[in-house]
Length: 93
Image 1 (cartoon, helix red, strand yellow):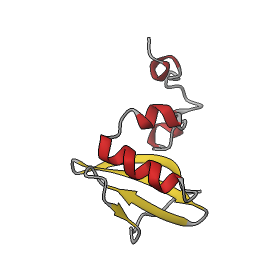
Image 2 (image 1 turned 180 degrees about the horizontal axis):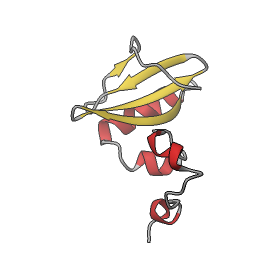
Image 3 (image 1 turned 90 degrees about the horizontal axis):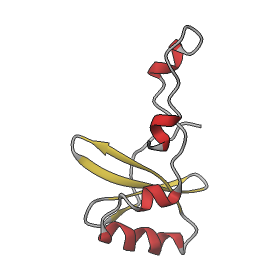
């Protein structure tokens, strides 16, 4: 059984409000890494050398972007490994 299934809480009155919450436990960096294309892995490695950390992967309208953070700076990397430093993504705290 996968850890995602084991960590699922049954819906109760106490946690009913949480069902609309989109944030979940952060997957490990290794789990995120395995979802990346080879081009994305190369770009992530390159940006890691500058201090950026792999934060999450966003899929919207069948477009997958890797999001990396360095303090308040946000970058996104597309499927082809292209690094976008002028991305408009709001990061919740």
